[in-house]
Length: 89
Image 1 (cartoon, rainbow, N blue to C red):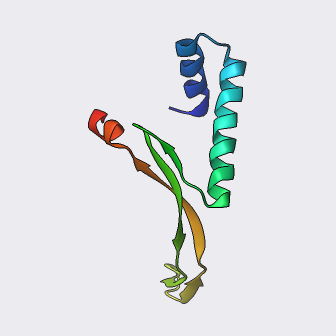
Image 2: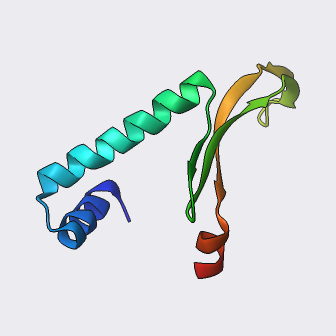
């Protein structure tokens, strides 16, 4: 399912226009992004939790040359599915 299909499904289920569903989805994504940027968690009971984790700097290898390269530390977004979502899948 891509974004357009999700918007169509939400619009149909909620009885709203696709434009309104698109605005709602964009608002949700923006709100989650801002919360994660601040370092907060976003928990949707029954669905899951969005959080940020830190990846330490490490050494890797260039697969073409075998040369050792340094990979910088960075923050990554994570999603942990909730119990209800896990049971339904």
